[in-house]
Image (tube, rainbow, N blue to C red):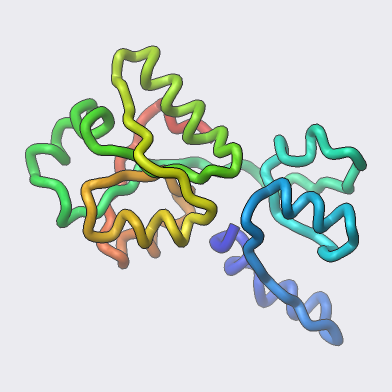
Length: 166
């Protein structure tokens, strides 16, 4: 996750002074786990569920948990839509990460149990893609709250809800 890595980039460089640290995004967590298995990566940041069924046992160090919020492009929605949380949740189509995004899937299921239907309009592979798709459109997506400063600077508003557990 770019927000976790960027917060610790200097420490990585300092800890490995004679090494080139390459930071990259792979398309899916499955691809990332395969790259760990094949030795193409020395370490990776993945969701705990991504390695639960891995055919090998990588050494895992928990970095903590993430909290999520729903973000939407503030200029795309009328003030009245932004003030009604349930209406915003059910009438604004969502985009989600396709990579077994349990956070979005769990949130959508939980909202459904609360009689708040959600329309999943598109699935993408990275948060960067999701932000690009949201900009200027009447769409919403779950992002880690670590992204708050970046999302605000890009013109996104945040909506919190108990269904957005980490």
